[in-house]
Length: 295
Ligand code: GRG
Image (cartoon, rainbow, N blue to C red; front, side, top):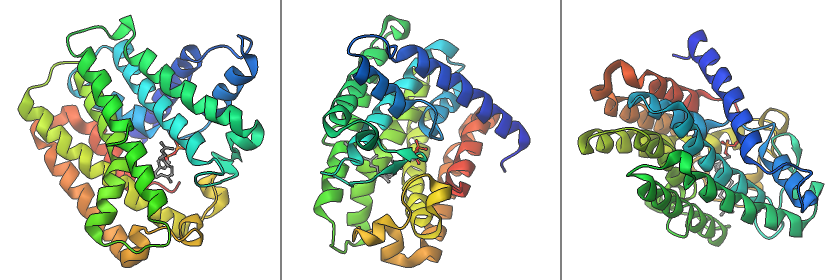
């Protein structure tokens, strides 16, 4: 259940994430000023910050150092922000609205938006490899994020998404695309949080199960919201998947079945957290947030 206590935890941490991102991003007065201004435009003041919140919630299980886990959390959000900027470009999804504002290439220009994405990706790895996160798992963490965002993860999923426009996919094909496009980065957020402390292999396997289920549930609900919600509520163009001929969970099985699938994934995610007891309460609440969110 999404309690008041969870809402105030989420809000307080969204504020902390926002100010950590503020500090990590170059000042807009630093040269090249227009690029830095556009990077800040793309990252700050908007977004639910689901991935960094998941990293922080997972860090709570291992009593992670607050500053370390915040750096890991921000590195994932920077990758996410880069992916949104590139996804909105005319060569990809060609969208004009993101987080309730003109997309980066509309506000600036296409070349700037390309460079914003490139630079945010570099900044993510600069952040994750910074001295503030030094420790025996740091290289493993860098590798995890690199793999999750590259051609075997998010960028690969995006390539499949572009190839599959106008096609109808079966469930395994759709899942294989979405595990990469959306799931891998969400999974990375959760595992990176745990890597900021100590966790046995058995615990990591359980956490991985939670992460995979929630990653997929996030996408199923994204498809439902695209079909059911409005542009004003989403802060991005609603109904675009159908208009663009994208195969989605909704086009494959309808809204009702898609919602049932998200509920099943939620149950599976929650059951994986049993071994962590009360320490995983925030992750349980985050799962609830992911499947019940309205935008
Ligand atoms: C361009 C390499 C590359 C990848 C793009 C992220 C992505 C892959 C595409 C975006 C299109 C999309 C709708 C993906 C599905 C799920 C998703 C990432 C939704 C947006 O994430 P939210 O809801 O956004 O967390 P906010 O704005 O809240 O951060």
